[in-house]
Amino acid sequence: MPEEESQTIMAVDELQAIIQRCQILEEADFKGEDFNLFQVAGQKCLEDGYAAQLLEVIQNEKNKVIIKNMGWNLISPLVRCIFMYKLEDEKREHCLKILDQLAQLCNPKELFLGLLEQIEQTSGEQVCQTVMLLLQPLQTVLLKLQNKKAYSVGLSLAMIMNQLTALPVPYTKQQIQEDKLGLCQCCNAVVDFAKPFVNEVVKNMEKSSEYNDMELKEELLKFCMKSLKYPLLTAQLEQLEGIEEHPFRRFATEIIGILWDIRELIPLVFLHRKGKSPHWENQEFADVEQKNSADSLACLSYLMFVQHFGIDYFPVVFSPSYLLQCNMTHIEVLLKRTEESMLSKGLDLFESCLLRMEDNSLLHQYLEFRDFIDVPQDLVKVMTLCPIEHLRKKSLNILQLFIGKFDAEGKYTLFRCLLKTSNHAGVEGYIIKNIKDQIHLSLTACDNIWFTGHHLISLLDLVLLLPEGAETDLLQNSDRIMASLNLLRYLVIKDCESDNQTGVWTTLAKIEQNFLKPLHVGLNMSKAHYEAEIKNKKENRREAHSSNTVCSLTVSGEKMPAMTTDMQLQVLHSALFTFDLIESVLARVEELIEVKIKAVMDENS
Image (cartoon, rainbow, N blue to C red; front, side, top):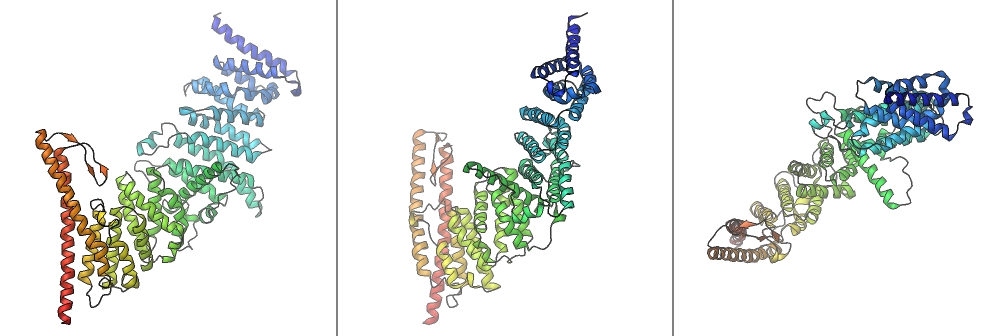
């Protein structure tokens, strides 16, 4: 007899010997040594490919008590062997049957701990495989548990989600279709795993309107909140061509369904209920818990108001302005993120809320809420700092949409706020252009007090000035300066001194002192500085006898990338062109003012 076969038969014989010895013992008489011997012999049978013989032992009615007490010890070697065999291998089938038998026969408490231990110990590429393999036996065991059932369900779901959270979420169409690590499939399998426990909660709530056993419901709520943060907050949830059933859209539908079934969907959306958050003595833990909850609620709002998951459950009684107010907290959470998937969700949610509203319908009193001031500032940061071009463009469009929804006083207040807080010449220039548009509307279509008279003069004090007087960096502030000059030119042309609807003629001396004179001085200084720089560069180039020398250049306080002398000269000439442009508009404005004043003087003489 070959030595290998002899050793294998010996392993089966050892198992039979242990079984026969334990069959005559009472359950209470099993010793630690018996458990160890059973585990070693069972493991040897599995490793040597004798799963069929082990299955026969487990299925034998006489061994029922032994398997009930000792079977859970086989979970670890069993899982290893299942992954070792190929899918079509008969030995793998025997192992799967053993796993099913253990779920039916073992002590539920012991087996529960054994299964959880396997999930906890798995990592990397095997996480989803292990979870999907053990979900069915874990569900079977949990349904049998009498004591601490809610706690055990919660522990299982938390352990599974913690393991999945370490995996990257497929984002592109190709990644979703490939589902390399099995995450898409696994997430939906976990939802199916939770369904019997959801049904149990629903059944109990239907029996009594005063359903008091909240523990299981709370554990399911925690699972839904974790699922909203991961994977749904990160996932791409748009419909994708060529994918018949988008796995994350299906998962989102199921999570919304669970929340509705356990009567938590509407409270979460409107009352911002966070469930029973644990009391943390450590403030750092408390902050993490609060942030996780905020992320989850933001994702839930995105799912409902942008993707319309669960919209059929939605009560159609709320005004668009109230819905915007409810969502501003969530929009703020998402706009503070830098990841494309989350930032884009924030922009989509903001846009969706604004598109529900009529123009000029949002009352200025909403700006008394902190979020209505903070969110546009976050939007400005996306416009100016986000490296993703299409998100920068979208945020600009949404800012314009947001401005358009406010009444006149709201627009006025928002403009003042953004001029003071944006710290970006391009944004300030954009706001000044908006102010000009509102003045035009006021003068031509509908007169309103906020963009004429003393209110406008107060606003012009913020617009028609140089932030640092003649020392202001004109190149860096060129967008703002050009927009301010264009606004002043418009006011001088459109508003006669005799009418003075805008009040610009009353405050002309102040404008000249704070804006026009310092601008003249600043232009002269800047042009002289840049012309001197150009002269130096040309002289240095002649001395070097080469135009390919690489040097560095500082423009507007920022060091430019290494450039040849010719490239530097090009930048310097471009700056001079900007100054010439500002100077020509400034000259035109001063000419218009002079003509208007002369005309009035001629009339009066």
